[in-house]
Amino acid sequence: MNKDARTIFASNFATAILGFGIFIATYDIAAISISILVLERTWHISKFLAGFLGASTLIGAAFGALIGGHMADLFGRRGLLIYDFIGYFLASILSAVSINYWMLFTFRFFIGLTIGADYAIVFPYISEMRPKNRVNRDMAIVMLAANFGMIIAYGSGGLFLGLGNYGWRYVLALGGFIALPAIFLRYKILESGHWRRLKKLPFRSFSDHEKRSIVFSSAAWFAYQVGDQGLSIFLPTIMAFILGFGFVNSSYYSLIVKAVTIPAALLTVYTIDKLGKKFLQTYGFLGRSIALLSLGFIIIYGLDIRYYGIVLLLLAYFFGAAGPDKTVVISPVENFRYEVRCTGEGISESFGRIGGIFGVLVFGFLATYTGIGPGILVFGILDLFGFIISALFMSGTIKYREYINNVKT
Image (cartoon, rainbow, N blue to C red):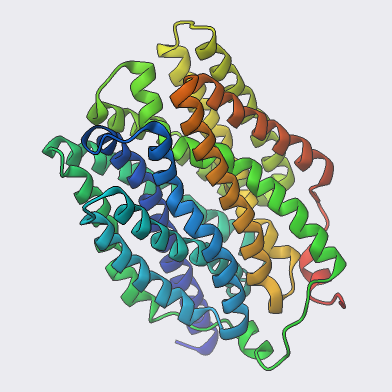
């Protein structure tokens, strides 16, 4: 095998391994939503405290994105990609054996630290390792793994929750054990060549263009994550309300609804270079907002929602997965020079995680005191905001990569 072939193989291998990591991270976020269904009954916690527990991972992820992104620019990508998953494994196992609410909350926070750091590093790393003509498509493929992670989590919830009150522990522990092969495989990946060449340079601040990019990408990520994380945490609860089922059947039906994201994500992979990220993000936000606003009003006005509710949730998930679910994550990467790329991605992600925290806590509060309809309306309103700012401020055709890597601060 010649040098070029070895380089291509190493790049393909790293992309596959990092996709496996995204799969595990999203499995874990969905796993706690399944566990909450049981913990509300066995630990007698309110919907607000349940939402706060669901938000614990997102709170950790907001800090993890800021810290991990900056550290990756200072000390390199490879080491942090290994050590954050070691931390994830330990925190996952400890969360599965938690004996009370605050113990579980604490370990979920530490899991969030590792997940936030991973997201802040993975996509800049891919952008530096993959050929320019494949970067968008490959990052979309890696994000596709996230859809499978949630589906597997809902499936395992349906399987393990039928085993009794301890079933939620198996769901959480499974995420830790799945991470073990990822830890060993990450030892095989190479350090980013771009970072190696730049590591001797002093840390540089953001240019004015990069600062403007942070404002937009943070706002778009925030807008999407409000509904995305709110639905991820409370989808089994919403399904139980719509269909009137118990937590086992609700978990299985959540799997069915979430399955629509697979063809939607594949559509993104196929069209991202043809239609562009702006088209996918703008119309994805619009379709999702229409579906969620319609569902919220139907619930508030007490109409029969059994079938309409499922269809509207399917549409909301489809439009999200076909656009902003991928683009808000991968678009910021191209707006930053290599030496500040993980830091910029981490800041944008951190605001997205704050949006997720907002969505989970607001939905939990509204579900407790007013019902789930107003909470779903909030998700729809934020998606409408995402549509507006994407249509007005997102670049459609300008190639930032070459410009940004030559811009002077």
